[in-house]
Image 1 (cartoon, rainbow, N blue to C red):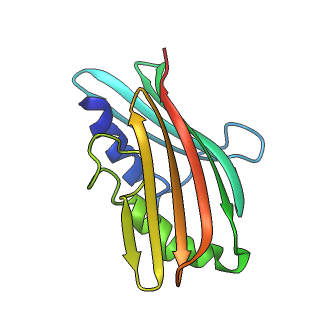
Image 2: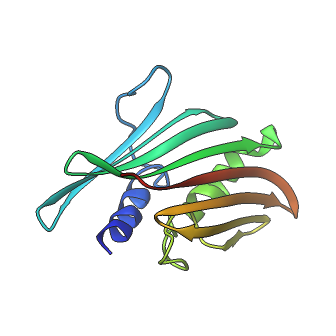
Length: 156
């Protein structure tokens, strides 16, 4: 249970939170977010690194006592470049702030469905925290303008 709870806190405190500050890049041209917390005497660290903007690729890794224990890879693409900033502001970040609210088993991205005026966000996933895959989409007035694929799981 501690990994799920930690993921929810970390995701809400980093990219989803539009006011969160990025940390120093770990690789050339990367954009990085970092969150850490001590839970039951164990040190948990969440690190999200991505590259790009309209089309982007990245990964999230959770460490427990400096050992990687969980990860996610993702690739997203804007299908309407003129809508990218509006989609992030009106659909993506607000949806990502709802991580874990309707899927406590797989708190990976946002809820199954989120609507904000003409924007609709959807996220479908299958598997377990040990091995999963998912697809995220954003529509404006029922036209697909963004999609993301993700997968990952437990690291041993």
